[in-house]
Image (cartoon, rainbow, N blue to C red; front, side, top):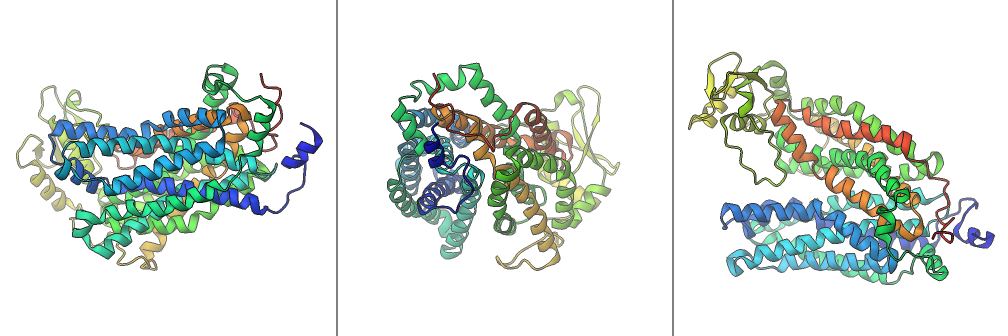
Amino acid sequence: MSSAAAAAYGVGQPARPMTKEERKVIIASSLGTVFEWYDFYLYGSLAAVIGANFFSQFPETTRNIFALLAFAAGFLVRPFGALVFGRLGDMVGRKYTFLITILIMGASTFVVGILPTSDTIGLVAPITLIVLRLLQGLALGGEYGGAATYVAEHAPHGRRGFYTSFIQITATAGLFMSLLVILFTQLAVGPDNFRAWGWRVPFLLSIFLLAISVWIRLQMEESPAFQKMKAEGTHSKAPIAEAFFQWKNAKIALFALLGLVAGQAVVWYTGQFYALFFLGQVLKVDSFTTNMLIAWSLVLGSGGFVLFGWLSDKIGRKPIILGGCLIAALTYFPLFKLLSAEANPDLHRAHQTIQVQVVADPASCSFQFNPTGTARFTQPCDIAKAALARASVNYSVQQAPAGTIAGVQIQGGAIIPADSPNFARDLGAALTTAGYPAASNPSVVKMSNPFDIFGEQQLVLIGILTLLVIYVTMVYGPIAAALVELFPTRIRYTSMSLPYHIGNGWFGGLLPATSFAMIAQTGDVYFGLWYPIVIALMTVVIGIFFVPETKDRDIYAGDSAQP
């Protein structure tokens, strides 16, 4: 690259203030991506209400198929969207590609808000809903890579971490916005009206966000790196083949997945989604309190995205991303145990003092991995384990002779057979008698309004959850810059998008289901933490040895020389 071109892109130049045009680039990319994540999280937050309106009246087999497809749209199809739109972005341009993704996402979300239920149009309703969900998943697969690449290619050399860190806030901001809109809509229309029609309001409001985002993006120019590449005629004519079927590029994508993104994904999902699951499902905190605790931690911790993005420009991407993975892996067990002790002290005490055993033939027990919620585990051993896991009971498994009917033994007492028609009732009564808290447990934390945060329990919990969010910001703040810098301009959109969405869609997206299955299998409410810990440690090792540091890399160098 000539010295004039180098100066234009900021290579070798001292840091300077952000220009007006660069601020517009960041705002345009960030707003659109916030909106896309807002849309995406709405379905997850309202899945139960939507299911009741679109799936519940159909036979179980049909419901299961719809649930599987909805799950696939949420996580499994995102990498395919990365391939489709990544290829388009590397061939046609960044700006127009992620303009297409936002139009698809926004239109699909709005149509969900006006879609008649299955009571009105029958089987057409859930089929249409699934098609819309698949379109959302595909669009989301193309959005992140486009936004990150677009911002990074506008950023001056030496400040890409800081500039792209604003994109990293968007997923958390989208989650936060969706929670707030749902909560305020519920308060405004009441629970009955919300279930009947109020759930549509958050989807319909998305049309305003779509209009603003499209208008802003239409004002933007194509990225300078892509313009330069097109002018020189060096763009790739087959970006997928070049990115993933040439080993010199494919190995970089593989190491990016295993040595950066996989660990980032599990830390991200643990700090936000698994913490939400653990508070609500394991510690039995009510949904309002759980959402408010998470919301406050997001407010307090989200500045870390920009802080660590900026810091990565100074000391490097790898030390921060891998350091975040390592610190998270080393501290998850004590932090989640402290979370348990503060959120539900009576339950925590029961975990430590009450001995519960499942007495069963191990051959009759299944590994209860059920990401779609559709599998049925009907053996007595599985029934016993699932009941104890749902009740957040710590238990061990005592091996019994082959053919033994599984049952539960509490504090060495009589075995409660799992095939008994009164098993659930008898088990609940026995657990309460032994000392497990009843549903009316007064020790569990509770918030009466969004600002009820000054009790000891609330403050400690918000502090723990904020620390988990800070881990998220460490691994996620610099990741866009690191991925952009690993690949040449001609295949950058395609190459960075696929490992990102496999990591976050598959490694991260499967975390809650995998962790719950691990809890049910072992009887230890903390055992599910081994999933993110092992993957985070794997990322640390692979990242140290196989992923290069990229903060000083000139992302424009060598593009003209590419074959």
